[in-house]
Structures are given as structure tokens and as C-alpha cells.
Length: 437
View 1 (cartoon, one colour):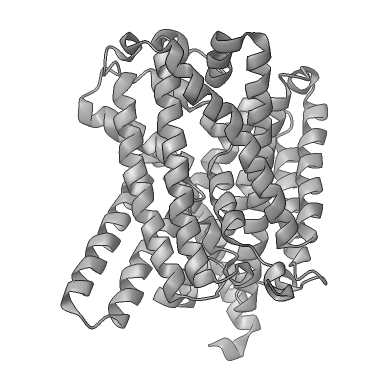
View 2 (spheres, helix red, strand yellow):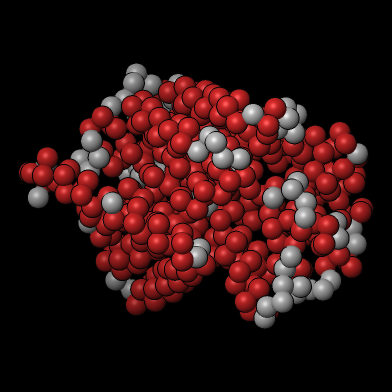
């Protein structure tokens, strides 16, 4: 490997970025959230998994058509539909990431509170630890994408350990009766599947991660599609098997009330020490996800600034080739959001920030699916190819639209307002760069 390649992300680092960004602390709560629906929620997982794989295929194909252009969804939307749509996608995606980073930092502190109860009792201490996590990982990311990538590989492996232990060991404590009644939601089967499918989709946010730092990836045209598909498949298997096992170990009525279902499952297997083992895994999951999303946040802003749609300060790099000011500005905004909400409890903070960021991440998926059709059709001359392009693009688009619908009125309303607030900023950037018209 030459020195230039040595500074880039390879297949395993890119795959770890995908897996690590998807598997955060949220997966450790998912079995409890799904328990009130009964065993039918597993079908919801399968539906969201199929949708996620469709989107992963779209992002993988787009990365072979828009080569070595960083920004992921932003780059694809810009090539497909022009500056304004590209800017709106970048604006919304960038905001969703630094807002989500605040939520992930809070989740990290929440997991640590198992070992340090003062973090739950004292909001000021919790805030200081949250801010420390953000700024330590911001510093790590200034050392280059390879440094960040190495941490991502390590944390991804460590976070998977307790989940895999539960998947393997849990079958020895498995009871099929725990899945009955199969649909305990009081809704029709179709409605229950739709709701659980939407709920579980949020666990797949981040499947596009390998496409964002494209010009920092070795042999991007080959590596990114492989990392995206491989990462999504591994994550899907982990999600579905772990949920099945935990539901099979704990009766649904108890599971629905559990604040730490994986810890409860591990406690059944190995006592209190097992519960602490899982809590450590949740903390590592949050720490790794925060590391990966800080990298993504800076690369999206950098790519947009390179096209003169964000201020030029976002594209300034240090000697390691890192957009350091993009890192700093994003982390400052994440820190401000944490400070604005420090008087709230950890759970209340987490819900507020996830609500704010979710829709702004789904809209880029919608435009990416549409951009795939737009770009691919123009490059294809065969009738059969055009049909397959429309089928894949339409299915991915429909799934993203369905997920936006399932996000709820409040989320859609605030997400839409947040996106429109970017329009005056876009007009200002165009005025500042008049020759861009």
C-alpha cells in the first residue's frame, strides 16, 4: 500500500463505519419498544430490513456513478437535480448529524450511569461528561481519517461482543411461549407491521455512511458498494437475531417495562456481572457511533463547501487532510444543543434531539433514490436496464416516503420547517458567489 492509500479508509474501516454508525445505544432498547406488539414485531424488522437493503443497493450503485465525490446523499442529489436540491439535502443532513451527535453523547452518559449513578442524579456532571466525549472524539478526528477509522474498527468489534454472546447463549434459555399472543397490539396485523417497520427503520439510519467520505476511501468505486451492502447485511442479522433471542428469554409483559432488555437477558444468563457487561457494551456502542458520526458531519460540510454552497471555512484542512473547522463548528453546535437542554433528564433530552434529527436524515434517502433513477437512466441505453433501474429506484423511493409518513406529523412538521430555513442561507451563498449563477 502506498503512502496515499495508507491515509485512506479500506474495506474493513469503511464497513465498520457503516456498522458502527447504525449500531448505537438505541438497539439496546429496541426489544422493549417492540414488546407491546408481540412476536409480529419480528415481521416489522424484516420489512425495514428489506427497505434498508434496497436503500443500500441504491447507495452502492450511486457510488459507482458519482465517483470520488464526497458528501454521500448531498453529492448524489446535486448531480441528479442541481444546486438547490443538493444544498437542501446537505443542509438537512448536516443538521441531522450534529443534532444526532448530541443525542448519542447523551446516550453514552446514560449507559455510563449504570456504573456512575451520579450521572443520572446530577445534570451538570452528565453534561460535562457528554461534552468531554464530543470533544475528545473531535480531537481524535483531527488526527486523520485513518485514526478515526481504527477507533471505529475497535469499537465496532467491542460493541458486538455482548450482543453476539446473548444471541449464542440466549437460545439455551429460550421459550417460544413468550411470542404469544403473536399480535398483542390491539391493531390489525397490517397496522402492527407498519408501525414496527417504521420504528425499526430508525435503527438503520447510517447505512449510507461509507458514501460520505468517498474521496478518503481506497478504490472507492469498489470499496464503498461492498462496505455498504456488507455492513447493512451484518447489521440486519445482528438486529433480528438479537431481538428474537431477547423476546424468547423474557416474557413480553416484563420486557415491555424493561429499561435495559439486553442487560436483563444477560442477567438471566450470568447474574449481575452480565448486566454490567452489557451496560459497558452500550457505552462502547455510543462512543463508537459518536466517533463515526463526527467524521460524517465534517465530511458532508466539507464537500458542500468545496462546491461553494457552504462557507469556505468548512473546507479548510489541516496537515492531515482533515477539515478541522468543519469538525469544530459541528461539535460546537452539538455542545450548544446539550447545554440548552441540560436541565432536562437524560431520556427527555434524547427524545427531543432524535425527534429533531430523524426526518432530516430520511429526506436525503428520498432524494438519493430519485437521483439514482435520474442519473442511471441518462447513462443507460438498454430497455431492460431502464426497467430494472425504475424498479429499484421506485421501491427505494416508496420505502423512504413510507418511513417519512411513519415518522409522525410532529416530526414531519419540524423537519420541513428546518429544511426551509436553509433557503435564505442558500440565496445568501449564491449572492456571495455571483459567478455561480
